[in-house]
Amino acid sequence: MSPSTRGSDTDKGVRPTIPSAGRSAWDRLRRRRTAAAGLVVLGMLLVSSLAAPLLMGDPDAVDFAAVLQSPSLAHPLGTDQLGRDLLTRVIYGGRISFLIGALAVLLALAAGIPVGVISGYAGGTVDLLVQRGVDLLLAFPGFLLALTLIAVLGVGVTNVVVSVAVAAIPVYVRLVRGATLVIREQTYIEAARALGAGDRAIILRHVLPNCLTPVIVQSTLQLGAAILTAAGLGFLGLGVRPPTPEWGTMLGEGQTYLLSYWFIATFPGLAIFLVVMAFNLVGDGLRDALDPRAGARG
Amino acid sequence: MRAPLGRYVVRRLLYALPTLLGVTLAVFLLVRLIPGDPARLIAGLLASDDEVQRLRVELGLDRPMPEQYARFLASVLAGNFGLSAVTRTPVIEEIGIRMRATLTLAVTSTALAVAAGLSAGVLAAAYHNTAVDYAVMMAALGGVSIPVFWLGIMLMLLFAVHLHWVPAGGTGTPAHLILPAVTLAAFSTAIVARMTRGSLLETLNLDFVRTARAKGMGEGAVIIRHALRNALIPVVTVVGLQFGTLLGGAVLTETTFAWPGLGRLLVSAITARDYPVIQGIVIVFAAMFVVVNLVTDLLYVAVDPRIRYG
Image (cartoon, rainbow over all chains, first blue to last red; front, top):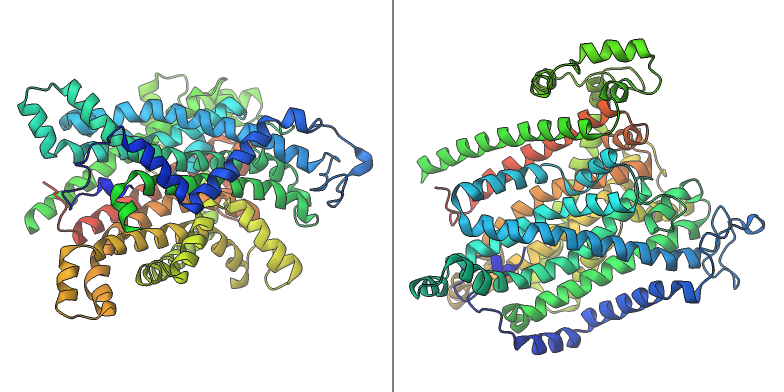
């Protein structure tokens, strides 16, 4: 839903992404304090989860002498129903969430971009068939699609990645197709064609680069969405298998204790909230930075 | 304009049918992708070998695939989704019992999201770049980022466990509806608010609005009489699409609040590997969503003269 895919103005989408604009876009992104805050939060969570094995002990270490303890110096976020340290598990949880999010988005990109461009550029029967396919996928609301696939594939990290990715594919197909439809009608495409440029050249040199902005913005937001979906599956007990410290799974596992011991639900959930919010902040900041029109207005 | 619009409506209706057919085919194929004997899967783990054999013949699982699908489709169209592998009651009855709870929740949340989202979005745009705008945008950011199940648990901890204002879960009184509806509406409210604000701000930059201002029209009248009407066009689509998110969120919200709807039934069916129930609910959810999208598309074309529907 980038503004550049809606077309009543003639000045949007006309400007090809100029490679040298990258630097100023980066500067503008950094200048936006909220986006910067998002970057900082993401950076901290990413580094701490990557460094988890160096910083923390065993996330699966059970201690029946220290079950369901409130936050203390020994256990800053408390312990769960098996006496496992929640801080350790929350930090380790970042590893699995980032991994699932990144893999799912990459998979969705790899499938969605080519299909979207071809559908929008070719038009006609190809477009019609692709859109029927997309309609079919979109007929299942995103989370339900992931849930249905899990019902068939079974639980586990790989199946969660595949399910979340498949649910995200139609988003990219629609986005890229929409952008392609707008770009295809621009005067400079007509000019390129008049100069003898073939379809392949037009797609690679003009259409794809112009689709890039909404795709980058969408992917940042999609990372957050993917983590959210995976956590939702985990909460239902249909995501990553239990001993693995995934944030949603931690909430699902401790379901019986959620209302009696506030810290069990609070911290893993807060971690999901923070990560998703950080991705959203960065995504919105990127949109402002990469879309000159929005930047001038804000 | 009227004749092509009529044609568009008919065509759009005709497109929805293959989508619905595709949904049944996809669900049919998906369940048959599961490794193992489908008759055993559909009969459930408790069924005896005789029962499984009887079911195999009854469902025509010994027949070729296309014939199986034709039979499946015929029974789905007749409202027959088979028997639950766990409870042995007809799936359609189980769905019927739960449908009301889910619809109540989804419709209440949608109404809440539209009312709150529209007002917040208009406020934010009218007071662009002021504290009001920032507050709305921060709240919207929270709304799109917060895991719906976690929001539910936090609201429960605060309003049910600590303050005792509302029940923590279950159903029965209107008070039971408050927390689940607010929880489920949070995401959609945020999306509607953002879309309304963004669309309104964009519209306020357009020539015809500048003209209205140049005529000396007050800002309030400009927003309400000119800008909002145009700005609402993309918001219509968003509300329709949100319904899908809402159905997905309903699965999580219903589980969090022990709300006896289709979503919770779906989760327990997946856990119990009750495939007839899974098939039935997925088809019903998809059908609901297809119909809502169809209505949204038609509304969209009806309100936006810029769309070419040739």
